Length: 436
Image 1 (spheres, helix red, strand yellow):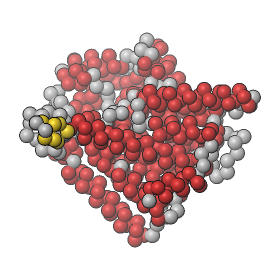
Image 2 (cartoon, rainbow, N blue to C red):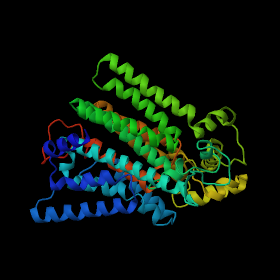
Image 3 (cartoon, helix red, strand yellow):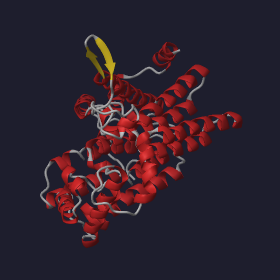
Image 4 (cartoon, rainbow, N blue to C red):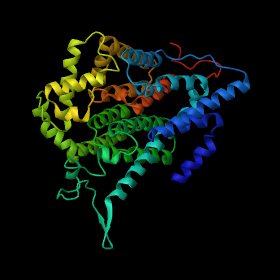
């Protein structure tokens, strides 16, 4: 079955050499930063070389949001004398739009499904590698006997699931996610599921549809192991919305929805990390425990300290180069030992903008999101709507633009999806959504 599908891809979806770079880029997203950087550098070098040879350069235009966001970070870091690394991790906000502007063929409608398949395939391979790594770490040989023990702390009596919240388990959360932070990997996987819905809508034939369904179900495995509450909730919402959009019979729609809904429900019931969260959420929603060491209670401390700083710096913030040190000081003042020890950030992208740039910084971010939302609704762009939701919801619990992988994820899909909806593509024109 898989062989037939691969043969269909090769015979009916021939890949031009100019498109290989973008396919590798999206395939590489779930992997290491160095792999992605090499790919980006190769695309830029090839693009410049190609245009020099052709003696024909495209008109460089792109949406204002990403370059403005990069300029905000650059200016704020320079003013507050922050380290260059804070700018470096955000370079993709500028480089990715330039790459796509130099390669308008990346917006071609015939290429979009290949890009989606590349991203999905990258996430599946990353999951397989992480699983093999966890398996290798869990197997020991003692006196010629093979012993399987996935617990990080070996001298404990916890079972397989319980150990994930009591000392750690090689198959769960950060121990499982090798290439990316576990929250970011979960975010990538949820959007890979979104892309599978889009591929399912365009696919024809039982074999291809069956493979897509198998891939979609398979991606629930890493979601369970990564145990990101935000990702699981996003996955459920995407599931419901996706079944509204795809064209299948009402009977199959209901059966599939109930089936997948039951799977996600079981995840909530049997995942020990989520069980701990549900058991403590009613007691910790508004409670502040200075001695908190993990979970939702620890995130509450970060939010509380962030709000304390924001209250006195609400207009322009403390600057991107100073917010980490200011937050550390507040942790120490309030006696929040664990966040201070681990140097936790605010764990909320919106609070992070208020910390670094006040209402001005947050305003830039929200104006950009609103602009993208209006455009996606006006053009009925399902993928862009889904991306904005998944990213914005996860941003309530993580500083997604603090890490390189978050900036990269945001930049590539905002840039790509602004150009996807065009029905007829002319390589001499700028893709829709650019230059607005």
